[in-house]
Image 1 (tube, one colour):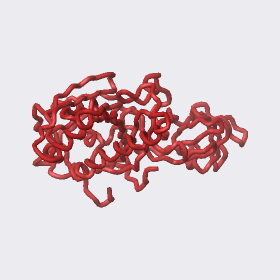
Image 2 (spheres, helix red, strand yellow):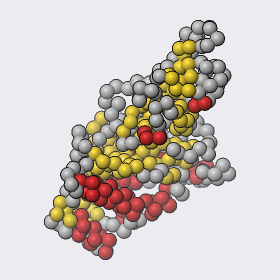
Image 3 (cartoon, rainbow, N blue to C red):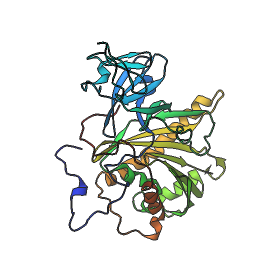
Image 4 (spheres, helix red, strand yellow):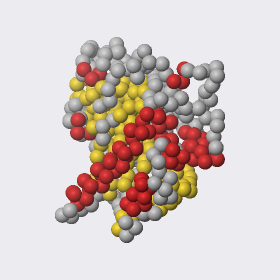
Length: 366
């Protein structure tokens, strides 16, 4: 968002006052969760990068052991950018006065001979590498379950293939854009696809929610007739949300080409983070079960690119909505049940130490 552009939230404050939420659509709160950053292959041993994520400037570096670590970016001595420094073993040494910090953020050496102050420590953050990306969790340690990025339906313990797409940006909070997949009304009004949907909502864990939608094409227009021909008369998909910052989509469940040939399920993630107040980063990641054998690479290429093509068909039409929306929640209908449940789920999530007002930035995502 340009610095001179006014956020829609600031308009119509007297005539259309916004409903405030504890966490949902709240730019000042960053929930605990996994946030994607740089590509894994961009970090060789000894490399370091400065990453701007949810208002935090961080240093991400790969140690000589191959492990990836993440700390707050500024040296606590005089505030020098640590990415100017040097990676030594699993430690980072500041360029200015050569103060050295270990991977937990503890100062372990000061060359002038004085002992490091006992309470001097940088915040450190949990990292994991998955789907070709480095993910950061805004907490030093997490339990075993939180260490896992949630798998999508049918992909547990499976060999997978993936494709990372380019990031794109939205001008509203990502909590709002995440609603898109559970709003069956707009399939008809925006995309001209009429499916009589039934909804199933499951809270698998306190920080996860899964919403399944299934129904039948009505065949009232060409797009619907093509859909029923390709996917079968009935169609279902599910959205899995984790920590308010990661959404997983599973499409073409039980679909049959020409109502005869079973089609593979297609999966993708949407990884979200704040770029600045009023502007968010969305990273699509296409994920599928990996086929082996002689034709495996062709099948994998086809599934990943079909997933991308189906997503791109809808992305532009939805984009103009979410780049101009001033979301308010005063007129819900019965059909909006999944959205009401989703907002309730978001408002029960745990805020992280990054929860504070976001500074503006012109930084581009890696």
